[in-house]
Length: 183
Image (cartoon, rainbow, N blue to C red):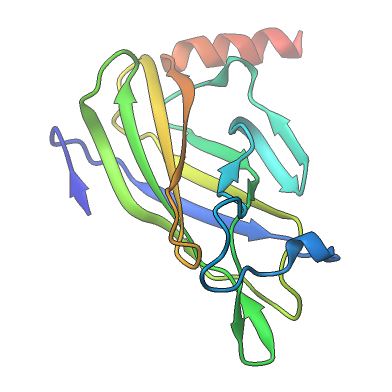
Protein backbone atom coordinates (compact mmCIF):
# COMPACT_ATOMS: atom_id res chain seq x y z
CA UNK A 1 0.00 0.00 0.00
CA UNK A 2 1.36 3.42 -0.91
CA UNK A 3 -0.13 6.57 0.58
CA UNK A 4 0.55 9.87 -1.14
CA UNK A 5 0.62 13.37 0.39
CA UNK A 6 0.88 11.88 3.87
CA UNK A 7 -2.84 11.21 4.17
CA UNK A 8 -4.02 8.10 5.97
CA UNK A 9 -7.05 7.16 3.92
CA UNK A 10 -8.32 3.63 4.09
CA UNK A 11 -9.79 1.50 1.39
CA UNK A 12 -12.24 -1.19 2.36
CA UNK A 13 -13.53 -3.22 -0.53
CA UNK A 14 -16.48 -5.55 -0.68
CA UNK A 15 -17.31 -7.58 -3.72
CA UNK A 16 -20.67 -9.22 -4.08
CA UNK A 17 -21.67 -11.52 -6.88
CA UNK A 18 -24.86 -13.23 -7.95
CA UNK A 19 -24.58 -15.96 -10.54
CA UNK A 20 -27.72 -17.09 -12.34
CA UNK A 21 -28.70 -18.86 -15.56
CA UNK A 22 -26.31 -19.05 -18.47
CA UNK A 23 -26.99 -18.46 -22.13
CA UNK A 24 -24.88 -19.93 -24.95
CA UNK A 25 -23.44 -16.45 -25.56
CA UNK A 26 -21.91 -16.64 -22.07
CA UNK A 27 -19.77 -19.68 -22.93
CA UNK A 28 -16.07 -19.16 -22.22
CA UNK A 29 -13.87 -18.26 -25.15
CA UNK A 30 -11.22 -20.72 -26.25
CA UNK A 31 -7.57 -19.72 -26.49
CA UNK A 32 -6.90 -17.93 -29.75
CA UNK A 33 -10.36 -16.35 -29.51
CA UNK A 34 -11.53 -14.22 -32.42
CA UNK A 35 -10.84 -10.47 -32.39
CA UNK A 36 -14.55 -9.71 -31.97
CA UNK A 37 -14.68 -11.63 -28.66
CA UNK A 38 -16.36 -10.00 -25.69
CA UNK A 39 -14.52 -7.09 -24.16
CA UNK A 40 -14.48 -6.19 -20.48
CA UNK A 41 -16.89 -3.35 -19.68
CA UNK A 42 -18.67 -1.85 -16.69
CA UNK A 43 -22.03 -0.24 -16.18
CA UNK A 44 -21.78 3.38 -15.03
CA UNK A 45 -20.65 3.44 -11.40
CA UNK A 46 -23.15 4.84 -8.89
CA UNK A 47 -22.36 6.45 -5.53
CA UNK A 48 -24.82 4.86 -3.12
CA UNK A 49 -26.28 5.35 0.32
CA UNK A 50 -26.74 1.56 0.51
CA UNK A 51 -26.49 -1.56 -1.69
CA UNK A 52 -28.76 -4.50 -0.91
CA UNK A 53 -28.24 -6.71 -3.98
CA UNK A 54 -28.19 -6.93 -7.77
CA UNK A 55 -29.79 -3.71 -9.12
CA UNK A 56 -31.09 -3.07 -5.58
CA UNK A 57 -29.34 0.05 -4.32
CA UNK A 58 -30.16 3.56 -3.09
CA UNK A 59 -28.24 6.27 -4.97
CA UNK A 60 -26.55 8.96 -2.88
CA UNK A 61 -28.02 12.37 -3.83
CA UNK A 62 -25.40 14.60 -5.47
CA UNK A 63 -22.75 11.96 -4.56
CA UNK A 64 -21.97 14.18 -1.55
CA UNK A 65 -20.72 12.93 1.80
CA UNK A 66 -18.40 13.92 4.63
CA UNK A 67 -14.88 12.62 5.19
CA UNK A 68 -16.29 10.72 8.18
CA UNK A 69 -18.48 8.61 5.86
CA UNK A 70 -17.58 5.86 3.44
CA UNK A 71 -18.10 6.11 -0.29
CA UNK A 72 -20.15 3.10 -1.43
CA UNK A 73 -19.83 2.37 -5.15
CA UNK A 74 -22.00 -0.02 -7.20
CA UNK A 75 -21.38 -1.22 -10.75
CA UNK A 76 -21.84 -4.31 -12.93
CA UNK A 77 -18.85 -5.79 -14.77
CA UNK A 78 -19.57 -7.65 -18.00
CA UNK A 79 -17.68 -9.16 -20.92
CA UNK A 80 -15.13 -10.86 -18.65
CA UNK A 81 -14.02 -14.38 -19.45
CA UNK A 82 -14.32 -17.67 -17.62
CA UNK A 83 -11.92 -20.58 -17.69
CA UNK A 84 -12.39 -24.27 -16.90
CA UNK A 85 -11.50 -25.10 -13.29
CA UNK A 86 -11.94 -28.78 -12.51
CA UNK A 87 -15.63 -29.57 -12.90
CA UNK A 88 -16.69 -25.93 -13.02
CA UNK A 89 -15.55 -22.53 -14.22
CA UNK A 90 -13.84 -19.54 -12.67
CA UNK A 91 -13.21 -15.89 -13.53
CA UNK A 92 -10.68 -13.52 -12.01
CA UNK A 93 -11.36 -9.78 -11.67
CA UNK A 94 -9.03 -7.24 -10.07
CA UNK A 95 -10.04 -3.64 -9.38
CA UNK A 96 -7.55 -0.84 -8.72
CA UNK A 97 -8.71 2.49 -7.29
CA UNK A 98 -7.39 6.05 -7.47
CA UNK A 99 -8.67 9.23 -5.84
CA UNK A 100 -7.82 12.62 -7.38
CA UNK A 101 -9.09 16.15 -6.86
CA UNK A 102 -11.42 17.00 -9.72
CA UNK A 103 -9.51 18.71 -12.53
CA UNK A 104 -6.14 17.39 -11.36
CA UNK A 105 -4.13 14.46 -12.66
CA UNK A 106 -2.25 14.14 -9.36
CA UNK A 107 -3.25 10.99 -7.53
CA UNK A 108 -3.95 11.65 -3.85
CA UNK A 109 -4.56 8.01 -2.99
CA UNK A 110 -4.13 4.79 -4.88
CA UNK A 111 -4.72 1.17 -4.03
CA UNK A 112 -3.87 -1.60 -6.46
CA UNK A 113 -5.84 -4.81 -6.01
CA UNK A 114 -8.50 -2.98 -4.05
CA UNK A 115 -10.66 -5.95 -5.05
CA UNK A 116 -9.18 -9.31 -6.05
CA UNK A 117 -12.09 -11.58 -6.81
CA UNK A 118 -12.24 -15.11 -8.25
CA UNK A 119 -15.85 -16.26 -8.64
CA UNK A 120 -16.42 -19.96 -9.25
CA UNK A 121 -19.53 -21.52 -10.71
CA UNK A 122 -20.75 -24.75 -12.28
CA UNK A 123 -21.55 -22.81 -15.47
CA UNK A 124 -19.77 -19.75 -16.93
CA UNK A 125 -21.51 -16.38 -16.93
CA UNK A 126 -24.33 -14.96 -14.89
CA UNK A 127 -25.31 -11.65 -13.35
CA UNK A 128 -22.56 -9.99 -11.35
CA UNK A 129 -22.26 -6.74 -9.44
CA UNK A 130 -19.48 -5.22 -7.42
CA UNK A 131 -19.92 -3.15 -4.28
CA UNK A 132 -16.83 -1.23 -3.26
CA UNK A 133 -16.60 0.67 0.05
CA UNK A 134 -13.93 3.37 0.43
CA UNK A 135 -13.03 5.29 3.58
CA UNK A 136 -12.63 9.02 2.96
CA UNK A 137 -11.06 9.83 6.33
CA UNK A 138 -8.66 12.73 5.97
CA UNK A 139 -10.05 14.17 2.72
CA UNK A 140 -10.79 17.89 2.90
CA UNK A 141 -14.07 19.31 1.56
CA UNK A 142 -13.95 19.57 -2.22
CA UNK A 143 -14.74 17.79 -5.47
CA UNK A 144 -12.99 14.51 -6.24
CA UNK A 145 -12.78 11.75 -8.84
CA UNK A 146 -12.66 8.05 -7.99
CA UNK A 147 -11.00 6.19 -10.89
CA UNK A 148 -12.02 2.55 -11.23
CA UNK A 149 -9.63 0.34 -13.20
CA UNK A 150 -10.97 -3.20 -13.70
CA UNK A 151 -8.78 -6.03 -15.02
CA UNK A 152 -9.88 -9.42 -16.40
CA UNK A 153 -7.05 -11.74 -15.39
CA UNK A 154 -8.46 -14.63 -17.47
CA UNK A 155 -9.16 -12.64 -20.66
CA UNK A 156 -5.95 -10.59 -20.34
CA UNK A 157 -7.40 -7.84 -22.55
CA UNK A 158 -7.26 -4.12 -21.92
CA UNK A 159 -8.64 -3.01 -18.56
CA UNK A 160 -11.99 -1.25 -18.36
CA UNK A 161 -11.83 2.18 -16.72
CA UNK A 162 -14.26 4.82 -15.57
CA UNK A 163 -14.36 7.79 -13.23
CA UNK A 164 -17.00 8.45 -10.59
CA UNK A 165 -17.35 12.08 -9.46
CA UNK A 166 -18.12 12.74 -5.80
CA UNK A 167 -17.97 15.59 -3.28
CA UNK A 168 -16.68 15.76 0.25
CA UNK A 169 -18.71 18.32 2.19
CA UNK A 170 -18.18 19.77 5.67
CA UNK A 171 -19.84 17.83 8.48
CA UNK A 172 -22.14 20.80 9.22
CA UNK A 173 -23.75 20.61 5.74
CA UNK A 174 -24.93 17.02 6.18
CA UNK A 175 -26.10 17.63 9.76
CA UNK A 176 -28.23 20.54 8.58
CA UNK A 177 -29.78 18.42 5.81
CA UNK A 178 -30.65 15.52 8.10
CA UNK A 179 -32.17 17.90 10.70
CA UNK A 180 -34.22 19.59 7.95
CA UNK A 181 -35.45 16.20 6.73
CA UNK A 182 -36.81 15.41 10.22
CA UNK A 183 -39.04 18.52 10.45
